Length: 119
Image 1 (tube, rainbow, N blue to C red):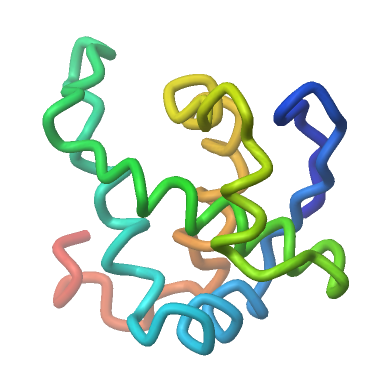
Image 2 (image 1 turned 180 degrees about the horizontal axis):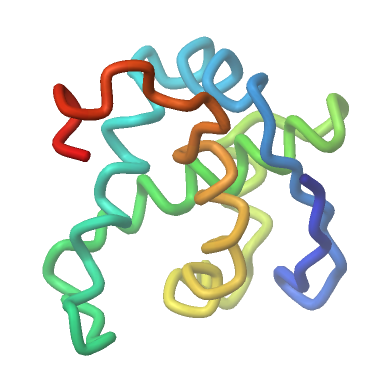
């Protein structure tokens, strides 16, 4: 899935696909799902965002990873972040990338043993 968002006053194409995990691990030396798991915890049942649980660097890394997946010529992470003269809009980006994150966190496979999965 691809989506274009506005970052630093310019349109930035993001792409969510299987390459995200490989790009993230190569760039940061850890599994992308550790950071993506944060998103399942930060929104309460009533829709309130628990700001204390947000890993702002993790958000920046995820967005950079999706930008890199969309455009292989995307510069390295630190230089990319330095380009944000007014700071990185973490809270705005969280709402912009929610649908992209769900793509990588969902499965289209049917569970064969539903009772073992609690179904």
